[in-house]
Length: 417
Image (tube, rainbow, N blue to C red):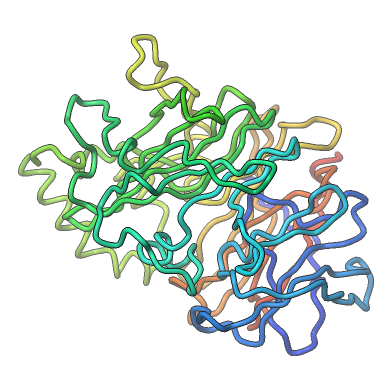
């Protein structure tokens, strides 16, 4: 890994507000690159409440010394991780609002839209839910009426994959994957052509471990494939055939339903006991990468139950060794050459930012930014890095000056060199 710090500048105004864009799977830049979408709020140190308003708009003159926020509207359907799903639809900014359903989770440039039960996320994964919504199936661990919905052109919803169906989709012959454990879906992402999407089916095991199952499906919910099971966090489609993901089988901790060996019981107890220490030490990469064997993997869009299913392939082994929000560049002179990713705060409360050259097999640490300890955990400020349209600039969210803000990192010296 080559250390090559790149120029970084704050692009959100210093006007007393807290600014952020949201998740790493959307691009804040307008089609012409002159504007940056943004949310802003008056507070930053707690979960939003049902009546807390976030303003939405864009930052004009972001590359000048006098950036200006232009308000387009507001919403109460938001969270710190993903905002209000603020995004460009051609040259129009759109976002989620309770008073204007449906609430969209993922939208492809070709027009396809998908969503899920935000109320269930509010209960089981509050970082990603909307606080004003309740789970209509709170007593049901795997409801048949909740899951992933297709949004049609008239804004009507069609349930195409239920949580119950996913629970019954197993690779080891068992009847159910989670059974009585309360389950949810999250992190829907279209492939580049918009013909398929991936997502996670998740539940917390009885031993306290969050179990993740990576699926893909066509837009009708007919060709459903289970790709990976164990630990899976962040991912991006490399192309229509492969997904890059931070993942691991975690065989040392045992599978979700099988009886554990004595060694697996010991490792599970150790993992639960050491988790607070792990977070306090800045999530040291050596523990998860070297001991538990989590890593970046290239996973083929082939069901694990298929007789010819290929094994996941190692990616940037020994170089990118910590969990991060990974993204391929879609634009520029060489689409797909660069992977952009980040990491969680280290022992000195600094968040790293990385670029990986897929052609040369070379990695660059392009920044390491301080972040307040009090803005970690559920209300954390992840960098969530996003490329601009030609892969010369990177937009991040950061609290490096003590407030939530948006910054742009100039990576032309690497990606255009």
